[in-house]
Amino acid sequence: MVKSKFAIIGAGHGGKAMAAHLALKGFPVTLYNRTLAKIMPIIKMKGIELEGEVSGFGKLEIASDNMQDVIKDADVIMVCVPAFAHAAIAERCAPHLKSGQIVILNPGRTCGALEFLNILRERGNKDDIIVAEAQTFIYASRGMGPASVKIFRIKQAIPVAAIPAIKTDEVIDRINDAFPEFISGASVIETSFNNIGAVFHPAITILNASRIESTMGNFQFYIEGVTSSIARVLEEVDRERVEVAYMLKCKNVLTALDWLTMAYNVIEDNLFDGIHSNPGYYGIMAPKTTNVRYITEDVPMSLVPIAEFGKAFGVSTVATDSLINLANIIFKVDFTKSGRNFRKLGLENLTLEQIRDVFIGGVPAKK
Image 1 (cartoon, rainbow, N blue to C red):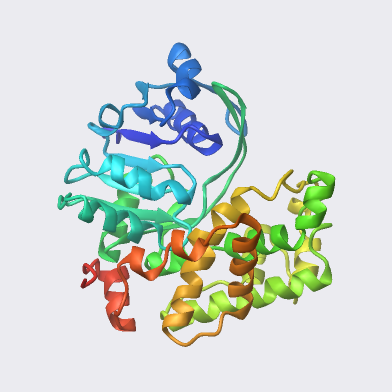
Image 2: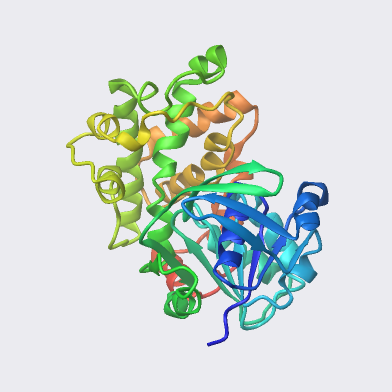
């Protein structure tokens, strides 16, 4: 069987881990990064040194800042950049993607695949390209040097869904020889709204802003950062997310407690006890600054679309709106304007059923 050719977009912690791991498995791998200087050590070594759960040297075919060179012969393009960079990557990919190629966002956060596909269409690419998204990133990893990375853990049973949903099994068939951990998700509604990072990351960071800034993050993010009061805020944000997902008729929506049970075998009846009963959270320190992806990525790319759906269809999102407003004040920006709002997603003035047609059937939104 001919092995699929993979292109990895982004040479951060996750992109380096995925590129090296795939290469070690014997798959042809190319790597793109916007900044050439960052990948010069990888270019000189012709690969990436991997340690941790998997170890060895992953030899790459190409590492470059030229998008066309990296993706032109790829069967699967794995996008491993923060969600706020998905739009820019879509614009760079649009002139070069061709029919038969698969693009997977790792992860999509909320509505990432839809945003990416819309941009391809807006840039005139009408080829038969499948755009999909993973619910979460497959690795817990950390760069150890310019051309080295450590995989601490490979996650299991990660849902992936495509637009249209009928293409999901084709995506899974194409990538399962490389990643048996990926499983078929019902639709991108499931992968987008089972985004537990949207519940945990912004609220804990924003509500601990004073402590983060005064100690430079010298406390345990989950264990010390989640008090009983903050846990109640998390529960309300989670309730709003779940209600929006139900409104969209998501059949496989997980509560944050469901997710803790699935991911960590934690069984409790409230989030405070669930978080503090999770041994995996002990030792995880807070960020050193509030200028961190827990806000700059998770607010505009996760909380904003959740709030947008709530506003459009009568679901109250008071807690979610409050976090967005606080983030706007702290950063002196308008995340609702810059984030994944209905206008950017092409969903303005659509009915609920029309939106489901966009998500599940891949029907282009009517402008």
